[in-house]
Image (cartoon, rainbow, N blue to C red; front, side, top):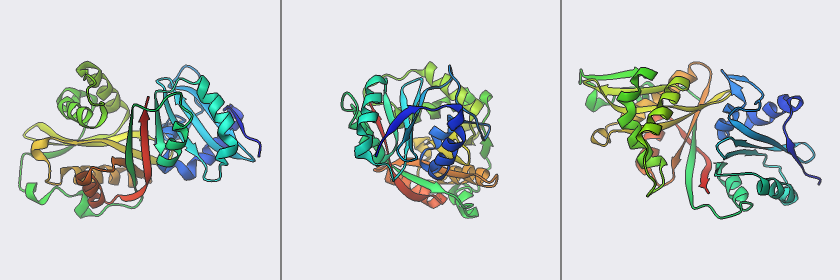
Length: 290
């Protein structure tokens, strides 16, 4: 079976979207790079996409999207003949400058085999999805805090960046930055401001101080990906994360959209919270860092 790997062209775009739609739940960030405002938009040069490659056999069987920052997102068909595709994929990866591979677990592992060196860090996750409206109980303020008049739920704006920064800093140090790597507060603030401008972020505050947050980190065609979930350690174990992710998901589902998130396989408290919020386990997910 002949395999072709070539750069996507505008004439291919409709077929690309048709290919991605059934798999969007596991490739939301990839889809977000070919969408704007919930509508498909072909990625133009000079933007966040360095290259978008189409992997064809008898028909379109995969998409490899490399961002300008070196993140490789992928969406591969279950029908892809991987043995036949090896040479073409290897030749392209030899020329690409990849710093990170992110996507469905088995496909990320397959792509790792073509990299010039083994990842210095790889993290395995469980992808979880929600397509139906969560229950009112899942969205509700935790029972132990319901009588607290100082507790308030709010939608964040760019003006809240400084107030939310301690939560974002805690999230990045616990969940994002590899052990031993430095933390840059100024970069963290700039990235948070960008997220607040482009994404939906909700939070709980107590007496005016944010104590928990959750929001979207990628918005595709039909799906939103939730992330950045973090609760101040002093407030953990009370159901704030469960309520936040459920309420954030409910807002999007009410608009006809679906939601997904991925969680580290060993993070039992988070998995328990997301399950209580209404999310169901889907497939393994993996991020590899070079």
